[in-house]
Image (tube, rainbow, N blue to C red; front, side):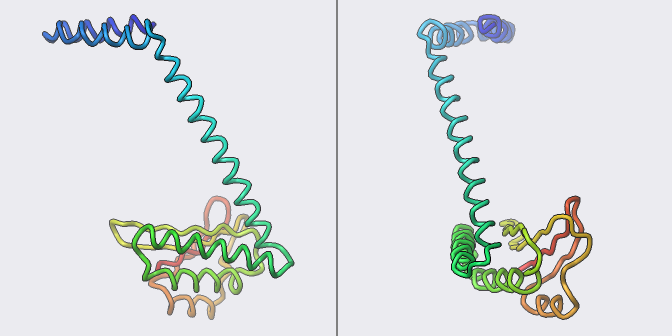
Length: 181
């Protein structure tokens, strides 16, 4: 199979007038991968990459579940620990993308949404995004299986004063409130 692919590439190179180059490439390819068994290094690297990917996904899922459980806990100290984790993640995001001036606003709006407007809804997915092209930063608060906005008129008015735009929209799985800061 590999020889057939090499031969096809060589044939194409011969037809275009690159016969000596094609011959050298084919010989080098065959010697390195087949004769010297270097394809095994590629397979080992692929295996390691898949293992790292699986472990990272598992660790991320466990950590996310732990933070979710902490945010929903009745114990104040667990909720506070989750808040510190969320604030540190928001801070790291803002510093990574060079939007440190939006950090304080992001913290304030996150606390206001999670402890005020959306306090009774659990679980909530919180996401922060930033577009470097349009320089728009957004905080998304999503609740699954919700069909209408959780914001009252007063809450909407308060949020509108603190950010550039409040977008309330249904999604396929629930409802989202997006705050553009």
